Image 1 (cartoon, rainbow, N blue to C red):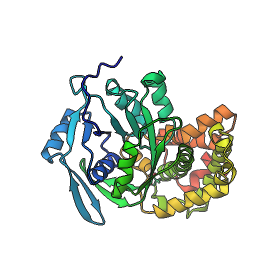
Image 2 (image 1 turned 120 degrees about the vertical axis):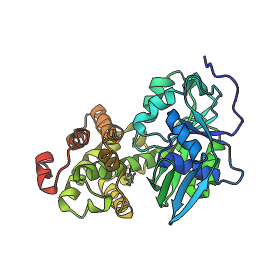
Image 3 (image 1 turned 45 degrees about the vertical axis):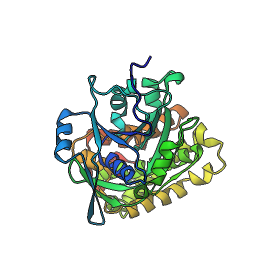
Image 4 (image 1 turned 60 degrees about the vertical axis):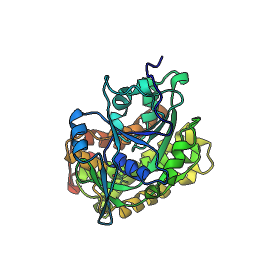
Amino acid sequence: MSTATPRSPSGRIHILGLGNLGRLFAHALAKVENAPPITLLLHRASLADEWEKVGRRIEITTDGVPDRTGPFDVELVSPQGSQHIIDNLIVATKTTKTIPAVSAIKHRLTSDSTILFTQNGMGTVEELTKALFEDPSTRPNYLACVTSHGVYSQGPFRSVHAGRASVTIGRVAHSKAPQYLIDKIVQAPVLSAREVTPSELLRLQFEKLVVNAMINPLTAVFNCRNGELFNRTAIVRIMRLLLRETCQVLLSLPELRDDPTTPSRFSTQNLETVVLDVAEKTAMNTSSMLQDVRAGRETEIDYINGYIVKRGREAGIDCRNNEKLVQMVKEGIVITVDEASQYFPEY
Ligand code: PAF
C-alpha cells in the first residue's frame, strides 16, 4: 500500500531528469498559455544549491537568442523529502537510469498517476513494469513520446535548442492515461507536438529505434559526426548489414506483424532512406552516444542495438553484426574504416 499522504495540487507536472530533454520540456511547458505548475525533481543536494544560485531558472538558446523561464519549484528526492502524490511525471533521465530514478519516488505514484517516457531506445517500460509495477492495480498510466529535437548542453541549467523539430506523443498500448498531460505537451509551441494513436506511436518508436541503432553506435565506433558517416562506402555497407538483421527482427515482431503497412514501412529500402535522411538533417550533430562515450558515461546501447539483439534471439534470428557493435561500444573500441573488415568480415 502507498505510504504517500497528501495530494499535490491538481495539474502539477513533475519532471525527473534535468539533462537537455528535461530542460527543454520544462521550458516548453512553462511557456504554455495557462502554464501548469511544474516541479523539477533533483537527486543531489549539491545540485539543489546550484539551482538556487541561478534563481531556479532554465535558459534555452534558440537561433542565438537566450530565453529564460522559471522560477521553477524544485524538490530534492530523498526519504525525508515530500511524500505528496505525483499526478503527472515526465521521465527524461537517461534510459539506463530510469528504474533507479523512478524507484526513489515509487511510493508517490498511484494507479491514477500518469508517466510520460521521453527517452531514446526501447524496452524501458517493460523493465520498469516488471521491476516496480508488476501488480496492474498499482500501475500508473503510461504515455510515451518520440522526439527529434536537437538540444545540447551549455552547463547545468543552460541548453541550446539547435535542431527545432517535433514531438509525437501517445498512450502506450492499453493505457487509460487521461488527456491532461498530452494536451499540455501539444499546447507547447516550442515542442511542435502532435498526438498519435498507440499503434502509430509504436511504429514511430520502432522507426526511431532503427535510426538510433544505425547512427549512434556507428558514430561512436568511427568517432565522427552524424554527417560524416555515410559518405564512406564501407560504413554504408556495414549499415546495410545491420539494417538487414534489424528488419528481419522487426518483421517478425508480434506487435507489428498484423499491421498491413509493416512490410513496406519496415523494409530495408525504406528504413535506409529514413536513416540517411536523419543523418543528413543532423549532419553537424555529435550523436548522444558519441557524447556519452567521449564523456566516459554509460551509453544507451542495451536499449538500442541490445534491444534488437534480444528480440532477435527470442525469434531465433541471427543478429551477429548488431551483437558485435554492442560489444564494441561497451568496450569503447574506436576504429578507422581500414580496420572495419576485422570487425565486420561480411561487409
Ligand atoms: O541520439 C541522437 O543523437 C539522436 O537521436 C539522433 C537522431 C541520432 C541525432 O543525433
